[in-house]
Amino acid sequence: MPNLNTSSVKKGRVTLSINQELLDRLEPYKQKINLSAQAEKLFSEMLEGLENRAWVDRNDESLLAHGQDIARTGLAGAEFERV
Image 1 (cartoon, rainbow, N blue to C red):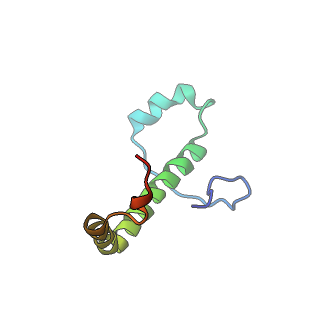
Image 2 (cartoon, rainbow, N blue to C red; image 1 turned 120 degrees about the horizontal axis):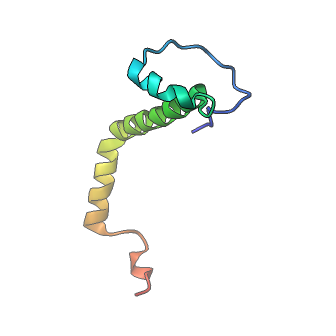
């Protein structure tokens, strides 16, 4: 997956609604936390998980069939494994 957290990438804006109590608790740390960078990191990780899940969903039948083939016939080259 491409690194979406680079400074050379064009930035967009988004409006978020965040629990006020959470924002109040973050207030003393706002100089130490880059909320935009943290949000980008979270969104990037979330997107990676969603894309991975979508890939599995698209390929689940093939993955299952491949696993069944391996269970039935063994792995290719297994006869050459050293014990």
